Image 1: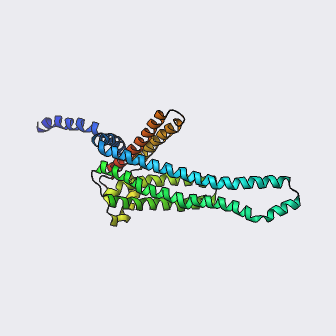
Image 2: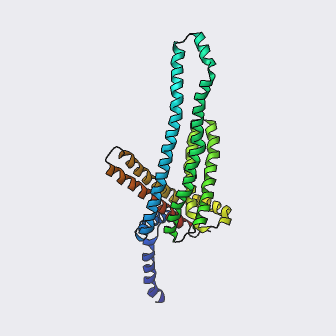
Image 3: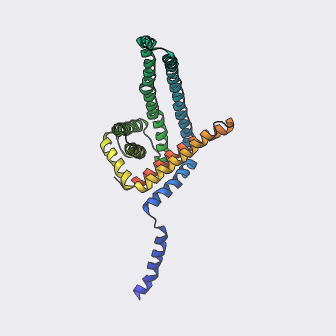
Length: 295
């Protein structure tokens, strides 16, 4: 009789627990997606600040690229004018004239030095500027996203850890990319692209784990990045590619609106900034869910 009285309660407990069961990967994806929108709704002021800082970062990058393009085109234009005229002379000249032209090596050297100077300025001036902008301004963006998701922030500590993580993954990408590009085969290029995408994936995971570690725990921090990145790859890769896809679609909309009205262009840019800001919050929330219970 005692077992008969307990039997309905057992059935009841089974019926209640079964609908709640969900695959852990799906749980991370859906809960993080839901949480990202709830956080934006509940922390409108922080999201507005993130919107402005994200816009400032994009504007700074765009301005740097414009200046770099102008400087590079000036150097290339001056050299191309001389080389084009030189080519026209050599096509019509006799062998003796060609010898005389070749003796004017100073002008030729100057033309090539202009090309070299323009390329060096691009690589050793503007590229480092872009890298510093990424560390400083985009570090602020990720720090604000960290504040939204984790409700606390230590700005200097976050910037220091963000810089370490960015430099580490950038150096790793540079070393592996140099090795693979030196091989020069199509397979090596494909492998280089896959490695670059995966390194960006691990870098984004690292930004979401900064809140858990101190500056003195850098080694443990990097170990945790790879551990969680592999262990929770199913959910985190989906979140990563989904956030990237949303940003790419928003970027394509901006490109399509470039020759449209100014209102449409500004609205598309605003949508791109919102997509990038939301993507940071979504990735932070995904990493937070994935890291729960993992030391």
